Length: 341
Image 1 (cartoon, rainbow, N blue to C red):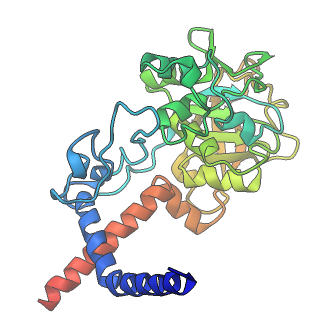
Image 2 (image 1 turned 180 degrees about the horizontal axis):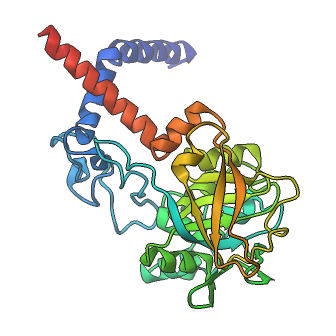
């Protein structure tokens, strides 16, 4: 047919969609989805790796949850909600005797931090893919595999131009302090995670400068980093750290930084997180032990800048906050419906 027929068909489709897709349909769909986050716990949102249309979620058999496939190397269920239950996020805990994963100078960019570019054959991500039968020619790029958190966490701090002062040379390396071994950053983080050792990053000015990359915050969080202490931050990256539950701290006193304090990264760091987020931009003492020069603490300002950011951080990040608010609204609606009946 001619153009007039096509226009008529478009009008008909728009009319049908407008008639069918209404507020009630959206409400029904949300109710079915949220069955997986009701009494069964919010962890049901992610579900397990199988289980048909429910994805192994905690709700009814028709809950609209994604059926995760553990054999996929492109899409994998991330751990972002693993600690979340219907009761809420775990209480904010102090950081006690954290190790330094990286001691960096100024202008560490999101390109240094975030997984980007081609996956190197010598990288932790390559070893992960090889173990799952992926040939080197099919590694692809981090961008192509950004739906697989296991690849992306291994690509965090994997930039060959990264310079960790603790290592003394350029490359994606870190020192596992207890053993003295120099490892790929991910492997060092995994070693610390196995020992349940929290981690911090210590950096210079303009940490996180460059383009905004969500994985520059996600990957750091997945590696077990609980806080970053820097001389200053790029604005958006600072906010992204807060939104993912990583505490950004700034050296609070003029002329004080990692260099002036002669920090080596081999110290242990302890931080009262509850005090840091008691109000916006709180100044706290970061406790230091094992410093060769006898430094026992330094003052740092928590760059959690607003009351809203404090709410996000207390919830464990913005993702947890949104889910908890959604569940709260659902429960309120159910109570109102029951009262009306």
